[in-house]
Every structure is written in structure tokens, then in C-alpha cells.
Length: 128
Image (cartoon, rainbow, N blue to C red):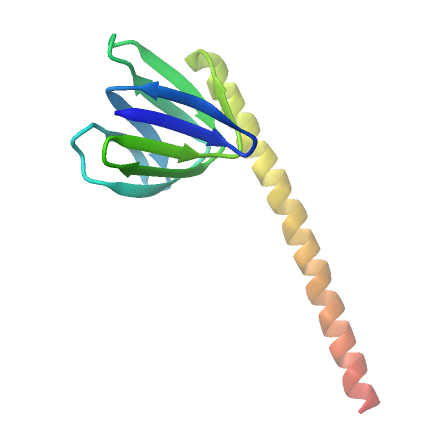
């Protein structure tokens, strides 16, 4: 089957593989060529794929979506990095920490918007 990994600005990988293993919110799962078509969310983690030479390759992905349709597996992710397993675990930890920081900033912005809305709503009630 063909594995294609897409980043926002490029096709990161396009290769013929025998097996793909990825991590979703419920845990790791594997895909073989004759498996049913599916779509799954990915969490930041390690995507493993095995080529016809039985060589395992590793890639860190920053979450995303995986779709298996026919003999094609497509992965859309914000960022992917190939490398050795040990260094990729550090990359995944950075992905998670960056995501946590973005989430904190987003929650803070939403809290400010909510507080501003409530303040304006109260001011509006006083003027009516």
C-alpha cells in the first residue's frame, strides 16, 4: 500500500509500505493492506511504517488525521519529523508541550472574552 504524509506546505512522504502503526486517542493501532477503509484522529506521537525490505521507519507527527482508503493511507499533520526512535520521543514531548502552551493561551483569551462579555452585558442592563 502507499503511505502519503502531508504537511500544510508540502508532501512529507510518499512511499510504498507493508504496514503502518499510529497512535490515536484510544491508543496505538496498526494498518495492513487488506484492512477495511477507515479514518482516525491522531495524537502527537510516533508513526511507524515498515517497507517491503522489512525495515522499520519512524516519524514523529504532531497529531492529525489518518485516512485509509483502498491501498492508500494518507496522513495530514501540522508537522512531521523522521528520525531515530530515541530522538523522536523528545520531539513528541516538544509537540505536546507546545500544544499545552497554545491551549493555555487559548483558554486565557477565551476567559478574557467571557469576562468582557459579562461586563458589557451588566453595563447594558444598567443603561436600559
